[in-house]
Length: 251
Image (tube, rainbow, N blue to C red; front, side, top):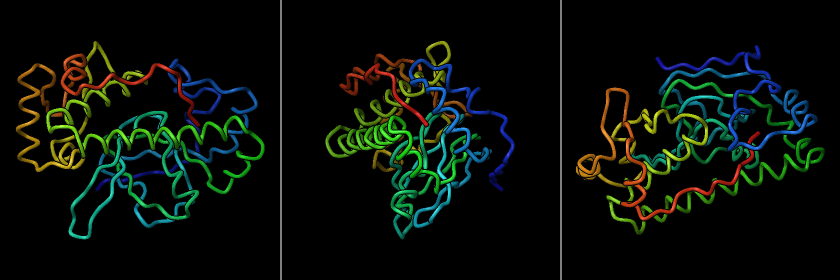
């Protein structure tokens, strides 16, 4: 059974947050760290395959990812799934449920994850007392919209090969920004079904597309998932210019 355990113990206090070592993530001011330390109520440790947030639910918490992989998704009544985006360290999860009072998508872990837990009812204090952090939250929400725009472009206009290449290049660059790429290689802990549900393709079409990308030397499948090995080729196939190098905020 896949489980999640919430602990009030702080193995990762805000002043020693492991995310602070990544230059891609903007540093916080001392008074902001003090506030975030009070905002944080604990940490959640979840096994792979755990549903942390459910569409239609009203969660009292929002989360920042400290480690691991997850994804946001929506389901149709007949069980068909659309994966909306993938979640990596530094990402904020549950903001929609905090502001709209109800989640319109679900969130599941792809790998074991550790998340910082924040109390939703303290969010107004962040907006009134820390305008810079409030801007950061707005920036994060806008960035999520931007990423969804790109995914919609893929589903609507890119070929199957371009869609798959874009997805892998996009995840590779996002993972590299938070130290998850080692020796220019990245293992993404998903299966072909996840790729199919992201790209809006059948599993058969997805398999053929990924085999073609593999024949170009861009990836190989391992027991633990998909190993991305040639970012440059993926960028060329997808006709995507890549992510900007501008540092981004996190909470």
